[in-house]
Amino acid sequence: MKKIKYFLFIFIFFSSVLILSACQVNMSSNSDKLQIVTTIFPIYDFSKQIAKDKADVTLILPPGVEPHSFDPTPKSIFKIRSSDLFVYTNKSMEPWVNRILNILDEDKINIVNSSENVSLISFHEDDEQVDYLHNEFETDPHIWLSPLNAVIMVDNITKGLVEVDPTNEDFYIQNAVSYKQELLSLHQKYLDLFENTTYKTIIFGGHFAFRYLTDLYNLDHISPYDGFAPNAEPTPKKVQDLINYFEETGQHTIYFEELIEPRVAKVISENTGANMLILNGAHNISKTDLINGKTFLSIMEENIENLKVGLEYNE
Image 1: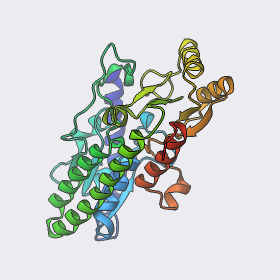
Image 2 (image 1 turned 180 degrees about the vertical axis):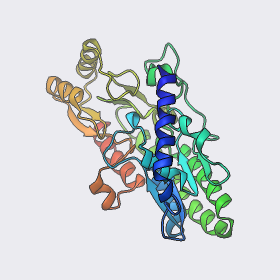
Image 3 (image 1 turned 45 degrees about the vertical axis):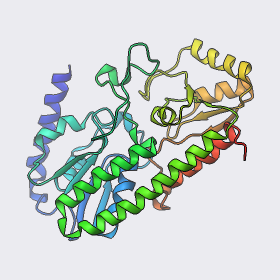
Image 4 (image 1 turned 30 degrees about the vertical axis):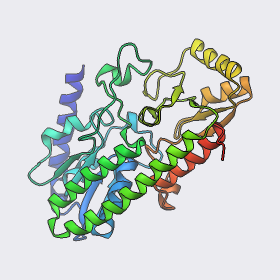
């Protein structure tokens, strides 16, 4: 079945090439700026912070779309093919990237895997967070939620930018250094936060994406979901176990994820009286937030404030 889907993908892609080839002479832009195409919001924002006015940065994930089930359109693939730099997260976050790497002209497009040099968390059979993407991949893709991983991602993007535009190397490196200082400041804020909270367990009513964060700061987490597939549903037993946990521990906040209706979190809140607060994984943002200039760091700052409430921060 996978082979059939793959060959169908290739057929559609190359059919589109024939149809749209006349438009491909200058698909990227009328601008002389570098053309950077990114897959998810954190990479989009990192790239903008580094390149600033030297590049046009495109997010191919439509605003408000949940990324785990996203597949690019032929138009999106043409956008990638006409870019100078294509930046993606990793094969677990964007499995569709593996299908197009062999058809991208790497002599013309610099491709950056932003997870290079990041220590990936593996899923194991005895781990609750398994069965992601039909067991096709074995690592947690949400690397950007650790500020220290985000620093490495910024380095990877900067390296790619310098390779395609060495004339502006100093400009990119200076911007990257400044932005990495902000990420390290975020790291310090997390350290202060988690050193001074009454509770050390994040109770999450959605698909838990914060494993890199909880591992970095020695926290526990509980979620009724296995894995991250957006169409997965928890068992009634796991929902009841979470309700029981609230009664046993006295915690009063359940967190929910962005872009997905928090049905399970609502059920648990209704049965326990727990407050509901968002813990935003920053996979993507709404069109309104994109227009208003919301950033990765501003989302993380909002998360910190919500974590202070839910974990009872002691100032």
